[in-house]
Length: 398
Image (tube, rainbow, N blue to C red; front, side, top):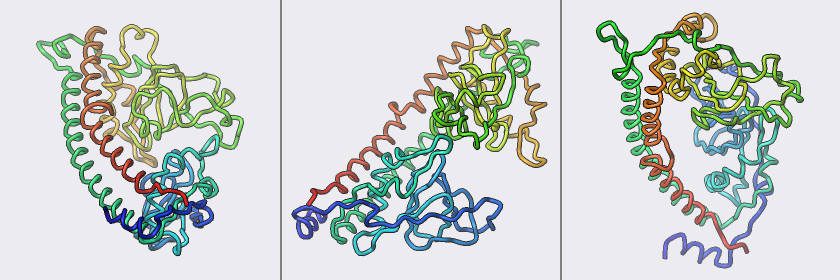
């Protein structure tokens, strides 16, 4: 019999009581703060993301802190801190210490992370509040049982982190290898006065010759009719971070009333970040809009039969790096759009583009597909951890 089984047999052989989280924990909102209000320091500011937004010189929480992000794409994300932190666009979960240990509550909330994410409400910017999770039923075994569960899950967490780090390093090496071969396949070299890509002659065109180049925009947040019950995809950087570089839907949506006179950007356009987080792109396979951080590249009619957009999507990784090194920094970092429009791209025959796409699709799947190779092993480790966590946090009701 394991130690946890012995403790359960000793302290709660007939099961445990379940209570609503809101009856055994208090929820305390953070304090609003913007980056302009921050004095640089080493205290993490916990806002709406998965990582600290920035660092301040003072805290508003000390000791063990369970934080839940309040708004944005990651609203509901649960984190645990043992150092002083400053909670901004988030709230803390403070358990009744006579009944619950904080780390046990944290593991319970992480076990219910998906449920918490699903409580998000709001048409424009989604929100999660303390009231959103107050009805969750938490099992309350005696404190010695809770502590042993925490000890076991701490060990599992460290082991999982170690294994994941090793696998991530291997995956990183594979991606580097993939990037090398991708860049080789997409490079054109001059041979006897001709420019060749993989032995096939190319023609050179500027971006503005091949594409309509226009900026995205953000409809007014103050007009609810632009956002409520929206069905039109409206892309932001969070969409790329969460869902990858070939996108058919967005996290947030807008209504037809929000669309300006020129209409939507057509499917099979590229969005590329030309301000803020510069040098990230995605292929959008649905009619859509995006915020002003992105510039849309939409094929001109003359090139409809000359450019495979999947080929150009792969070539965009080269342009991404160029963008990072060609910025104006007068007030706000942005790509030098004059140079961007004049950027020369090599265009091989369509048959060669399709051959390159076929090769790179296979490489891409090997490196990134969740069902193949190392990513699948990483996912299997996570599922194994989640299974044991679920077993440890399941009790017979009293």
